[in-house]
Length: 358
Image 1 (cartoon, rainbow, N blue to C red):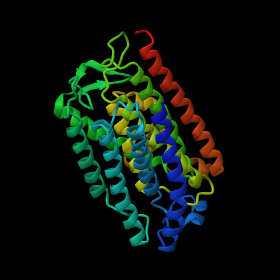
Image 2 (image 1 turned 60 degrees about the vertical axis):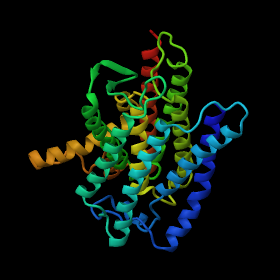
Image 3 (image 1 turned 135 degrees about the vertical axis):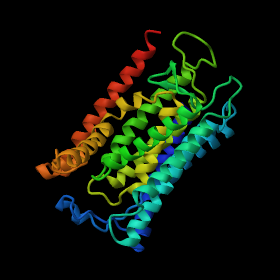
Image 4 (image 1 turned 180 degrees about the vertical axis):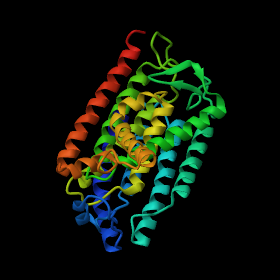
């Protein structure tokens, strides 16, 4: 527990202190957000607000994780170290963050709200996901566990549904791409993506800590979990939570900085990675229910327009529809936070019920 608190606290402090520095640097160099001309008119006033704030999230994420391990090494009672599972999740979030950074930088350089084309961005996501999927199926520990499992999972492995090595890698590509885009779609209002991501990350701190306390490799008993390195994964989740919360201090309305694709893709990668290494692939659909709803609004809008030449919403993603209906931005954010919180509570309840009968 001490390591988890240190990871979250260190990441929070680094994020809070690093973000205003980035605001100054990015403002000085003119790294401001470009706004879609067809978007809500109220957003035009945000043009020029520093973007690429996801850099602070990534720096804080790594700092929180490494500081926690540094404190652990200095402790006389340390019993764990840096693990492959933790590094894989951190690496996935970082690589996706780099893809987002390139996208953000090109938007700034071209002075328009178009960075990497869809093909280039998709290639970046797929390459990162394939590498993650391949490496996550290697590096067995002394108990024979790899960071990921080839089985489909909900609150734990569904042992009767095995995807196989190739099937798992393809599945990893789908999961990583879907969640990276889901968080990216949710970003767009001050504090929305950061606040919702923080809630899901907080839940993963609870889930991984619980898995560590009921680890089958430590002591086999009814209801235990076959998860590799649950405590180290908890440190990653805690560091991501702290980084997200610290950034949210400056990103809440009125935002002084935006996370950009740098932050949204990195957070999406972190959520996907956490879901895979904790064997909760499908449970994330419940925990991140708001992300799912917002993503589906885009799918429905695009599908309806292509098939019927009609739009279901005034604008997609869904949060912009409510803006055009007349809701205030802060009203949308707070209400969406409440919805996200309810999905998180439901998902955590489902996870606990899945363990309790055992």
